[in-house]
Image (cartoon, rainbow, N blue to C red; front, side, top):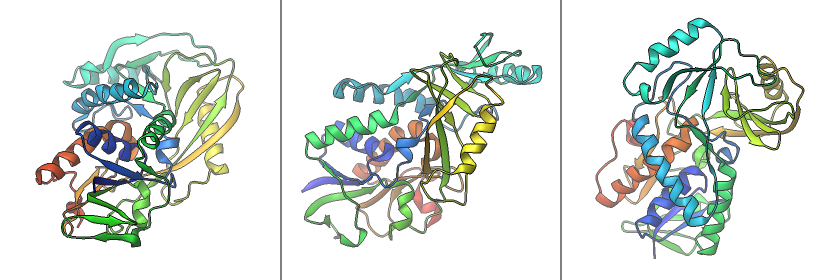
Length: 345
């Protein structure tokens, strides 16, 4: 009998699996990649909400937690997916510069907002007011992480690649059963797939659709992530990721012409060079109405757990939320009330 079954092989599921692996627990991940928000994510990690120049709760501790967490995976699997790169906030006015300096004096923010205005003459990005640099940032190549980790799971016979059938789950008082598998606990990390989970489908995880473009722009030379009305993330070989949109009604993973036009219009307000769209990506972010994670244990089933609601900050929230849930399962103590799923049940 395994210690755990984990449903979902994206950022949340991988974060929990890695936590369990380090603690010597046995597990099987069941995943069919039907929820692809991790694969199409921008993957940025940045503790600062640049629109309002503030930080979410626990952002500093989360940043300190994720760096060694991801580095250990890179070293063990001999892959590279954590790309450290500064984020440059493009200033549109002197007023924006002043707001930046005011924010940079605040405790917490002072370690991430540089007081030096960056003046770089990037070809094709006019920036008369310069840029503000966010320190200690970067992005995860989430596709490389998911692919590499799934290969690791296959090598250890710990990945079942199929759609999870919730009706085949049998919950006993001391263990669970699923199609011949037995485990002490099950953790659902399905993202927006929660809507098909009869145990958790009534939780207020609304989901927001996000779309991004991958463009080819040979004349666009960047050594940092540019954030203005959209972000422009250099991938190498004249390729750039541009995003992202927010759509609250459409719950499909299908790219749309409307989003492509919106992103193109916003991009063309920033750059002056020609470009070609080579790919368009779409996925549903698992977002909650209070913008906080949904983690914890089902009130009626003490061996059924949830790791969800990581939203747009999955790269930063996945590892620490996985650790908090894991510790809760081992100790029997509930997770913090502000992220506990029972706040909605």
